[in-house]
Image (cartoon, rainbow, N blue to C red):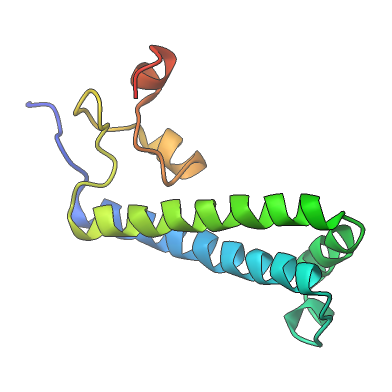
Length: 126
């Protein structure tokens, strides 16, 4: 049997669902960080969701500089997840940009925006 060169549509759909869930949470976390930077404390989902409440309370004790760095990092994470969705649409998702081989499902489940296989990453490529 020939080596698999891309994930099936069903597998891509599974990864798409995972990425959309992570993207939704990342965007909510980003909004909380932005709100902490602007000093606004609106009564949104943070009042009813324990997960976001904890993040909000943690963000409230961060310095503006730390919160700014976290917000930038979160924005970058969101951009990486959005790029992964585009790769799913193009059916190039999960293909290592260095080796051209499939990135393991385990790695993609842990880091759904990965573009390098463990092999390429460990060899310092990319």
